[in-house]
Image (cartoon, rainbow, N blue to C red; front, side, top):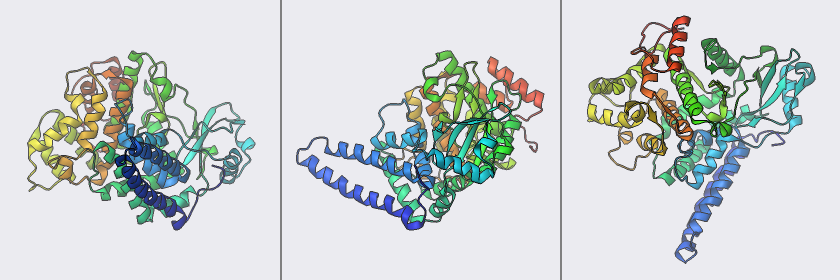
Length: 472
């Protein structure tokens, strides 16, 4: 990417709309060729189309690419879980990387935003980005005081492009229709995308605000200070602005290298990730809404660093309590309570024909590994089961066809799918039920990590999940 992000309603809409129209025609032609004896014509069409679509979204940046990433949660959660469709493989690639902007342009953004030459702010600055994603890219650098840092730089024009995209209902509808079609390769059919698209749009709009992300990093850094195995970077305020975010560098293995580590170490990482993701809204009102292992740094000492905080929700205390109570009702088999909490949350009304048994059967699949004999091993079946419970609605009686997903719960589905995918890819075995129970304060820990985590909670005077008093 050597220039600014394309802007304007027509310029943003036409490539995707035109591609979608061409793809529809090409699909018909491929089907006719297959019938005429050209074996594999349809499969080759889908392979080619998926690659072109991923490339289009990757170069579009902003909402187009980010929505592709978010809607690829089926794919990201099937990593290592059997055969993926061409669209799933292509969309999953968006989770890992994107075409970067020119180094001279990246330096210019830094200088314009901070009002100083790059060399005045940093003692060294690596022109080759460490990562390039939907809204910005990250460069490694060093401060004049010797600290190693990561510098997140927003693409020029991406903020306006995102605002244009979010106000362009035609573009969003086209994007979600295509994403639904890609999911359909699994036999899935998305439920009403209204609340889903609204919630995703809100989170994406917040991600362009680097000052908001800096505040999120500060909140998580404060929460997890002195934690024995969870690491969060620190914002460097003097080297951060509206379009540049500098944070201390966290060392560790990347996701590709982590998957080749010793199994015992991978088991440890899985429990650490669980304690970070689910502990954040048990010990505080912070919900990390975009879990992806590409944003983790895996330490050989069993620690895990978390480096991206653009997609975060700050939960009202009443909502946090409701979420925890709903999960606890399911874990403890209190079916009537579970149904009551789902009604209170807005999944369905009190007079719905859905019974307490219906609700519990659905939740059983979502928390299957928590209910299973412990410790539990995450296998390929884990991701398939998670996808089926939340997205695969071919069955007319599937509960997801008969409920309304409340906006605050849209990203909890992504959370569940992503965590299952990560643990599946690690082949992890750990005490999933015990981890949840000790973070909720209903039982004492059974693992060394659990004992260290609970000791930290008590030392800091933080609440457990089931505590109902007001929070930070």
